[in-house]
Length: 70
Image (tube, rainbow, N blue to C red):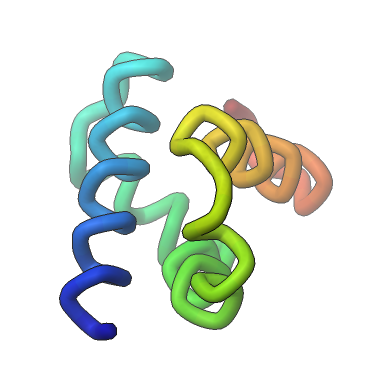
């Protein structure tokens, strides 16, 4: 299951970088500082049943709710 989680993280991270035109290092800093990596790992069982766009929108909502500028 670890491989599936990593694959999802890679897909969603790549989409996030493209959507917000960020450098990967900057996007990673956001994901680390706001607990997005942990969120994906802990919620994988539910998230994997949804599309990447749905997951990405959820991540954006989490970041905004926590005060991140995205």
